[in-house]
Image (cartoon, rainbow, N blue to C red; front, side, top):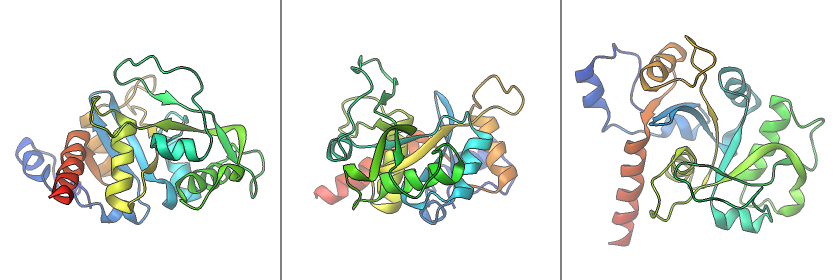
Length: 218
């Protein structure tokens, strides 16, 4: 489990744990809380997006579920940007929303969105697997290292590290103390503790991702 959350969260234990990044629970479809400077996100692997896990994201998040994907994958699926990306740091590059072209009803339910998310994460899916527009938002993740990683990049890195697939669904975690705001790191950690799911800081994923790629290049 990433950054174990079943023990008291003191500053000393936090520092000790942050080097322990185990993605096995995430690889099995468990949601993970990812803390970044922008706030906390709930992330699940696209190929493992069950209706239960997707409903968890919708219930505890903003309801705006996106799927982080690489530019190459988006191009292969013929999913263009919603508008020209303005290049502002940490601004998500949203692409045309989609639904699965078969096996769903309205497209908005957790079960329908889970089906669509799974197809986005399935390497065998092609452009015909989706109708446009829909209820799931692909977002481009830039993994070239020339921009500071944002939530989409971190989610895609988790997908590659845990499942060798650069596709992961994410939804901002709503603060329980103030439902008008996004949960920040300490509240996200407590949420993970309460729901017995993994928690990690986004810089730890970034370091692990680039370290792994550096080792592969040796």
